[in-house]
Image (cartoon, rainbow, N blue to C red; front, side, top):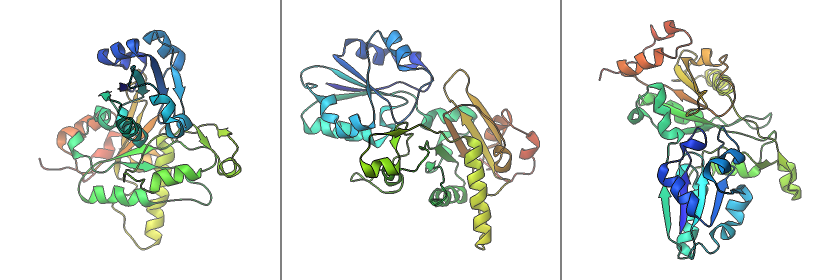
Length: 311
């Protein structure tokens, strides 16, 4: 049987009791090592689990999935994923491959940023479509995510922005995964920690770039630039410098940080190391506002902001 096991967001101890029991008896245990990162390394996980882990990078999962599934119809194989197992479409593909081969599977869920984001006080059922904010380059500055944020804003909904990691050079595969639906019509919004540059990809060189993670202030700066671009085009955007936002860093870890304030204020906030996420607030219940004030960069930002819903 194939087990897909979520590891949560913090450290080695965030695995569920059920998940740990499965890990201990599986023949092989793979650690998915490219859609997200934990605050501890592989060695710490191995020590806590009492098992050797096989690192599964992007190539292994997407191009050599048969090796992961080998003999899984005869023995138990575990596939460990930071957060929840279905936080990336690659894992759905692995399940479909297993089913096609007649291999049974079981999913053991855990916390992911999609639900843990409620730690800031915004209510989960008030969120609209989640978007990815990508690193711009000199020649590639997409704004499509901003249109989705504005649509959520018009509907009074909050927007969770996943801040995407990029290599120093943009990759063809990453561009496709962000903006082109695959055959299952999913739109991945994950964090790649192993990527080839366009040059190495074209030449077939298996040389990978060092990871670079987007911070809240970098995302805010890009959004502010888009706001200015839209005004130059004669638009008056729904999202402006004074729109209330929330920055989150290392959610689920002991050193988790949260900051709330205007988009302009968050462009200067430093929240430390990765991973970061950002929320563009929609209309808010008074309780949501009170919660955000706990993390305010400047509480006066909430006084004149017209973002309150009646119920």
